[in-house]
Length: 317
Ligand code: BG6
Image: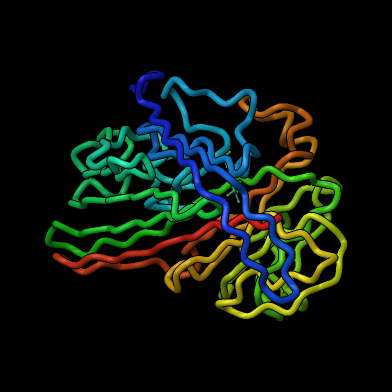
């Protein structure tokens, strides 16, 4: 079990360089702070300019006895309930396994953690008891406003390795004014609350704080923006550096690699918040989960092969 000593904290002081980009009003934050736990290879905190970008519940359990509520849990090698008849484990075993830190940058900017099949409690492996794998996960402060996450899954066995995954990121927000903007129109989605499928014509999810939201969106083109006010809509295209109008404040832009083609948007609202022992009754007002994921079609890594994905979170103010 992971104890408090497992938590590694990294700090980075960044020299402020003000770059003026047309139509973007950005005040570059001055410093970043990163904290990770080997329990679940979990990013527990990331602050930029002294402000928490990620939400960590005041009731999160940090003693390794369960998945940590908040930060960035890893859902792997399945998302949601297990399809294996003997397993009731939600979101896979990665977030409840003890990873090992195998590399830590001397400048304190990041670390790499690793999980092998032999590290996982056999009782949690469900349909994966014949699989041999090594998962390497690197977390790195890229600059004073960006965090980089990279994962490489190696199949070191002799049978194909299928999996789904999600970077189950909890973002700290002012819920009353939040919009999640998917960079696409006509986004297909599954509403996990009703079980119905539909198409989100405008690619915008809103209503946080007013209702429970649990959407799996398919075929999302990154970046995704979490925007905190009702300012002017902005034209987005992959590769734009924020591109916000002067009236819109983008809190976080999520840019995931092509393999992470799905996104899950979740807010528990009142009833589910009360039902979760490790989540405050009112905390649904302070967070939104926007998860970069691969859930519609699983990845299948051939024997001896590997698959990689990456994610960049960037803060604008
Ligand atoms: C989300 C799911 O990813 O995680 C929700 O879409 C689920 O259905 C939520 O309720 C939280 O899951 P857990 O297992 O961390 O309570």
